[in-house]
Length: 434
Image 1 (spheres, rainbow, N blue to C red):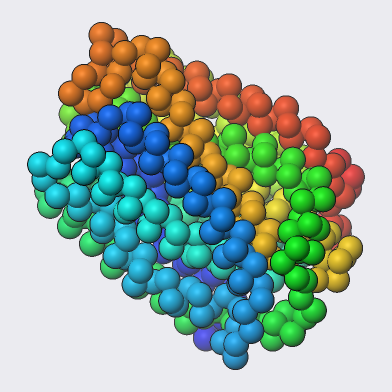
Image 2 (image 1 turned 30 degrees about the vertical axis):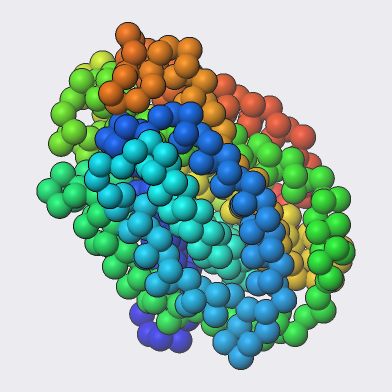
């Protein structure tokens, strides 16, 4: 691919997704296992840390989007923030998995909280600015569907690295060195993405809204809130499945830690070709309808996880989950871009940063929902930590990996029917009101 063709190509844009998702998914998959099961941090303290983070995130997410929208440099609005975040993200990710040995519960909680706040704050800047580029760089439903499918293909590769490769690394090297390896992969991929990304100067010079006006317009956008509320429940399932897999392997399937990689790979390797299947499907239907169908497929796909009892059964269930997950990964960015386009038509202002930030806050609240689900189910079944797993840890993690996800996805599916949007139609492209 020549340099001219590589600039703002869906393929080079997706390198940013690969970069951010490698450490991000390793974090979401293994931080609970690392702190709760390995280091023995109590579930109550782990949930308290996530709650404090959510309060902080309620402030830093919207402000990150607002500041991004108002940035105006010769390098663009988003790229300066992304360059600035690279070394900080590597450092913060390392600190998450480098807790000193022999810490008391209070000291371990304090370390986790500080590392969590730092890591998630830098992640906010990255996700807001990276996500805000999507509707800017790719315009029109057909191009967005293609770009989203490619982006999610890269995301699956990142998830596979961040989840399936991680156990190999921390088994042989430890959690801290694993974080350093992933941090290096992040930095190299992120720099490659930025090298081939060029922002449109017209967006930098567009009229800007003030803080109150900008958030006021966002608050009034009913489809935006309904879409993101629905998405937050489904996003919770993404994080919950990832974080519960190590527990599911240990307490339900009874397999050694060395085989967790096979279980994770069964889900995420299968997603790669299934993303192509979903791309073929969504090209032939309205964007919102495709998103809604993906939620239903995801809900049905988590049911077989309840019946797993061996590695083979877990792998089979994982492949089925892969189909539902692939659909959910591909469809939301397309609907989100449509909402932002419709907002621009009404206001005449480009506010990708604010919308991406507020959307990120709503969907990242899924981390708290996931933590609360873990706490409530743990209290009901007697699981406290790896040192005190209770009388029936198998039941604990069957419920957390199948029943809770099904309920959350059913809620998401029902809410999706309240999202009414008119798809953007291009010549020769199907679409219409939903």
